[in-house]
Length: 338
Image 1 (cartoon, rainbow, N blue to C red):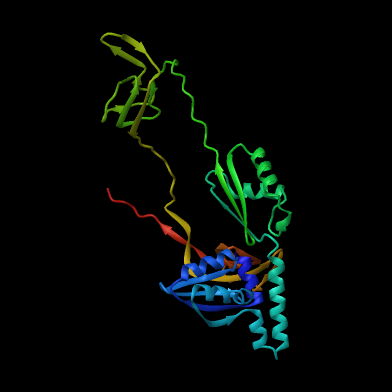
Image 2: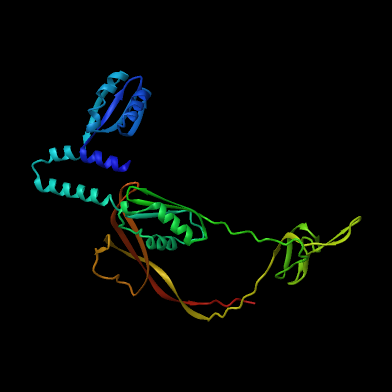
């Protein structure tokens, strides 16, 4: 879709207003004849504003007549109209042509990889798996065998239940469904008790199998039996079982830490500097020459890829580096009165 819009920009397009009582029929006939309309807006039930390529605009004459609509051109845009407007400025036209040719060439490559659906698996692992299978930033789209790559990754990893690759413009969208961990299999013939792992106060106890030995509010120690693997019945007598249930408790921890009466700590001063860098594929252009004028600082890096449509990325990345000044300040602990 975005490639078609880009192609129409190169060939030229017009913004039109279509007015009539059969707008839906007009749109349907255009779709059936593979005539692309985009940026459509309805002002009223009988008025449609849309964009259409020059070549397609010449084809709608019969459709307009069949649907008894009126068409008016609001605006003309695209490369042919720009060239005509600046026909006397040769250098400007050459630059525009070079930009258009560059965009057309770069549209054949992958310039961004988007991974969705990860929870336990890291992005870096999947990026590495893709690289091992021949997919990286700058890979030609036609060289990607999606089915083969999907099969390879599924065979390599047991923690992926499903993976899909979808090329959208110059963006490769990788959708992943992770495998769920297998539940622990409980042998019901294994007789056991549930015991406390820490000291605490019981706040909730739910017994599924066995007999609860404690109740809410009881204080327990590590190793105390909470749910006993034994059932007493009037008619069944004593039966030993695999105890099951949920027990919640409030626990407490103690920690010792040595603190000096006087110590120093790093704090932010509020001063910061930002510097920028342009990455064009593997070529980097620094827009600054020196490091920040701070003795101590923290560094924050942010990268943003340039795109002209939602899924049409360019091999250009803006890298912003922010330096936040820090300094050492002496801190004295206060004595607490008894």
